[in-house]
Length: 426
Image 1 (cartoon, rainbow, N blue to C red):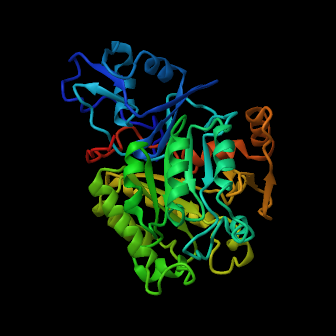
Image 2 (cartoon, rainbow, N blue to C red):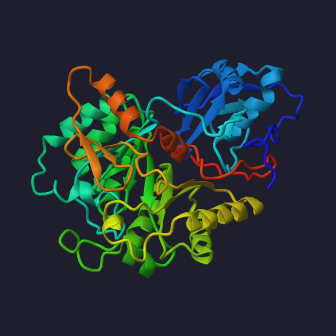
């Protein structure tokens, strides 16, 4: 595979290569300055990009609102960033699908290092209507459920506010199991972060649509197979919480259709296990997502933590799964299919995610996969203490790799596909 730049260059601006180009920052973009340049997060696509200093310099000349003239020397870089959704140009540059590592510019050392979290996952509740066979957070929910009370969400919000992450994820448990908490957390996180809602779709997803729109949130639905029987065996219902006959497959599909019809940006995430990791099944799921209008797909290799650590038989796949997913992405790129794919291999670095429990504690998977380290965050100098805990206990290289698609290679600049335009609710 030819390895060059990770994004296409200045094709398709609609005005000819010599036409004047103007540009502005995308309205909902999130940016953070880093020692290597910048990190950009595109909420519409739920996609991070690392920019080297040259790209960062070109981006710093832009602002939200009125478009500014683009220097000739920056034209190719600005066009590439517009294709990624980071900025918008006049004449318009269509967004295009992205395959491979999310790097713009020169990164000879590969995925760059970071000193602050990119994402923090915040538990809305410890309750969940599903009993997923591989649940990563089962050990973080089971012992909390009986004692859970309405005051805990205040502590979650306080610790999340002290976390200097670019993105806050409303997760659980299932946020739809506690819609009041979910709305409060969405609103609180949106004060200084981009917001993502993680959901199975089991519950009244429609009741959250107004809050999602108001906070420009992205919704990430969980779906593991194009076949209801396989999906529902991997993600069975909890009969104590939902009626018999409820299908996690059907609820996820209904949620995706509603989000797409309402113009709420959404994606799908899939946990890849030994039961759904064959190429034919993954290709079938990819094609179903394309037909449903999904433009971003995250594939997570199952981690030997939570339930998967207790009962690993028939679930764990390891690096063979990485090879399968790499081939899937290569096939998607060769066909120029209009979908972003992110692959994570957290099984290699289980302590690469940052969680806030339903009780408001930091929860970080231990390096050996044996349970989670639980840490309290005091009220005095909370941000400084939290950063210290992040750097001490989280695999920061694995954290950056997880969100910058470090599992994959770079793709040639000519390998790309146009993404269908959507109207994002604002």
